[in-house]
Amino acid sequence: MNESLKNLAREIRIDILECIRSIGVGHIGGCLSIADLLAVLYGKYMNVDPKNPHKEGRDMLVCSKGHAGPAVYSVLAEKGYFEKEELKTLNKGGTKFPSHCDMNKTPGVDMTAGSLGQGFSCAVGMAMASKLKKDGATVYAILGDGESQEGQIWEAAMYAGNRKLDNLIAFTDYNKLQLDDYVSAINDIYPIAEKWEAFRWNVINVEDGNDIDSIDKAIAEAKKSVDKPTMIILNTIKGKGISAVEKALVGSHSMTISDELYELGIKELGR
Image 1 (spheres, helix red, strand yellow):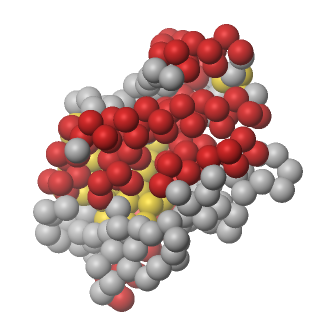
Image 2: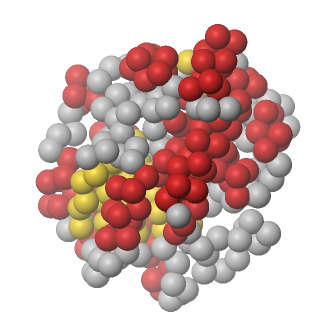
């Protein structure tokens, strides 16, 4: 099973590269770092139907770090929500694929995001609504580590813990880098695990947040949580999968995709 998930993650990375290349520049680092997570969620766990994107009781994903939209679009294309060729309209006039996720434009996107912190609050509200409706849905949310400096994150975290929203599973893409510098140099969020625990969350730390098997194990464990939402801290590598993007560090937050970088990436990803 997990070999197929690894193949899906590779295809997602290729889609991300081609999608961002079509516009010439974009948030490739933070997209590549969550490709493995998206492969596990959509390849194994999420109860969704590409033919019925709005079905009641479906599992929902909120990519609160909304600039990773191209990663979300890529996995949705792999799932069959739309044709992969459409990804090449990213951020162009009339596109269904703005650089940040927009639920009003893209089939399969469950919540608009972009203003950091707000997507997570929406995810908490969605989980609460699901509890009230008793529809059995699980809400998944992806947060950035730079985003976790926002006070709104912790207001939402406090509410979710108090309301015992065990149908909410969140992930921190803990790649230690944000737009301007290392997270620790801007406003350090360490110790992150203890913070979430203090807000009454079940916390799982994944040492290699780009390892398919470890992500799979963590989600399986999270789904057993009772009366507590779960935060899975994924220690990831920004730009994972393309060496030049990984080496760019802070510079990978938004990069120009040259022909040379594109060819290197395609080669390293095995196409």
